[in-house]
Image (cartoon, rainbow, N blue to C red; front, side):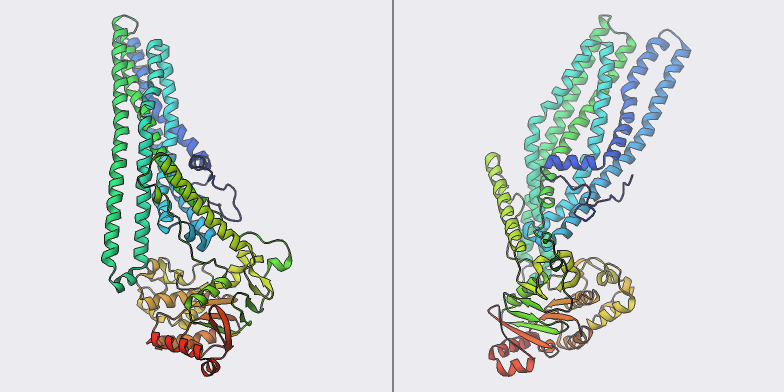
Length: 624
């Protein structure tokens, strides 16, 4: 039985048990079933943890009635030994239950994190079109922890229920009247708190929504910190973050108040049950229907009953909170990538090698083994061309935030808001599916990319643009995350990207640590490390979008010469207006209005095309 790290095969070719994302409750039950063996062990250990407290009153009563009162030392020792054995069993079982509970918690927590990670890999850039980044991060962090707590308390609640039935049986065997009080009162006590659960769920949902929005704001601020400083926007965004923090605080206070109400009701009603049982037991003793030992046992039973009832309250609280988190989680995991398996046929499953690339939308042509540069009067047109070649959908949609429209809404208004949100997300998904299903107009050797499996496209075509990020880790991991390259190859990629200074500046060289998103690097250094990573992948077709926009002219000149030499004989497409890269191009395609209006060398286009001269001159001014 594998427990940790949890084995997650969802959203892979080896997928065995995909998450049930039909409803929040279905997802939670899938989580519990997925760790069924651990949950079963937790129930068993929990039962033996509860049993000593459940049977100890009975053993103590028997010791009093059959040992102490009659003066029978042997009987007293025998019942005392049984009581000691029960207590020892409880101690050992408590340790084992705690171990199983932590295991269950970790499996749910890290299993959910891995699910979100695999879903993000499966969806790729499409995920950001549908769900805010902050929402995805919240699911992978805070919600996953909530699921761990829910799985742990589920097993404990089952064990508490079994122990409760055992004690109820003991009470019934001693006094039918008291046994009936226990069996009838306990469900009523639990049900008495149910009116508080709905407002508690609503308050927790609001807190979770505002927390997700706050995480998204933090992510956006960190991603654009350099730009914010450049335009003096730190104070504005800081104030917005502070305002949202206060909303999260207010929502947390509201949720905490309802939580306190549920806890108070549980404690009050459990205490009332204890008082009632004690009073009834005393009357039974006075009337001669109970012995002294049985009365002592009833006191013990009454005290014990508080324990499982409070466990039931805890279960309902955490399960309600988990349902809120599950609703957010299935909104992420329930999405489906728009890419579909192409129809059968050899020409549809493999891209030709050393073939011409054509884009029907713009008329762009890239011949195999050539260093082709795309120049555009509008950078968005050349970026769109690069996206089409890389088979990326256009980034022209805003993700649908979870429950933004539900802030403060209740009843039908909240349901209508949820329906509207689901409809917006479904509309984006339908648009993505329609765009991914039709021919994209980009062909390689006459084969449209829409008819090729996405895995084949990603293995042959590499697109590196300004959105490419660096993850936290060593320099070696940043350049070669899969560990496939030799040191010589990595050093060559660094040299071509003119990023040797990054290696020299990091303590530890290849094992030097880089912060998330490369925060410890300058903009130019980060861009050059990203370029080195793209070069090290050694793709058959490499598409680079403005690879030198953040470096100075001297560095750019070295990169231009080395890049052209390094990629010689392999298809390379670069979008840029830098004259230094244009001089190295085998061929240049000039876009105007999204269409190729001229092709040729840099010298030819400079001499014959005024529009090209204006764009290149502007590029020279921007590079100064």
